[in-house]
Image (cartoon, rainbow, N blue to C red):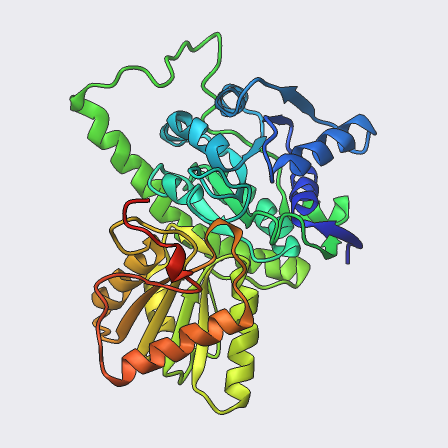
Length: 399
């Protein structure tokens, strides 16, 4: 099935966009996302891909152009990262409230300051409550697959919520691996003809989009978005199952390895998951009862699925690739809520690692497991995150 190509994560997303028959792309380049739109532009220029590409002057304009196109019933795509995504913040909310099934690739890069080109999740986590589905890919293959799955999910009439497909900057975006690219015929078994529901721009039916909304109806609009987001959970499960039957690659909103019977389980997302999984296999070979629960869909958060994966664990370790500055990490908070709502009183520990592109090595993960087991043996609690690989001599409270 398909054709094996050597692609990095950026190119894999570009091919996923092409195979999804996206009709319009609008984007503004920003490191490390730029190769996505460069590849799409090249595919269009060489007549391999029939689509319209709009060059705009900013990320705010890119998403605005996509909103306009999606409002006419066109399948659309954009991409961004870091402060480019921050510039889009105003219109990410408009996209969701307008119930437009836009798909955006986010190539995660630290939001300044200080200025940084490298990966962490501070950019996409600023968007977690803006009403977008958020899928985190671990590898270039997953980047392509999640892009296709995103369109089928967002465009479902039960959902009509936009999706962000996240890949880690450089760790996935510039990592080249063999990727199975579906043929056009294979992709057509999964990608259906776009039948827009909210094609607002019709000269025979004038509408105002994102009009000033009074308190009399604002709450109901937000609740409607919430219903669409919650419906996305079941639709994602359906799409993962359908995708597996066609392409043979299995996904779920939480992907587990070694969690059954594990005493200590690490919860994480993104490219670090591969390293964590490798260490889990090594430690299990040594007789240690450890596992990994990788969250693929951060929004809608898979609360029940994660709680099921963590059932029986004595220690739950959450690694956030972002600092919440004065609070616990966002993945930790969601995980803790999942535990408490399911009646699970396991020890839960928040770790911060991999900020600003710092590598998460095998030793990093081993240190996390060791620290968690040390704390768990004492049934100790932590009221703030544990920072791993921290250079203490470089830390100063006054900057």
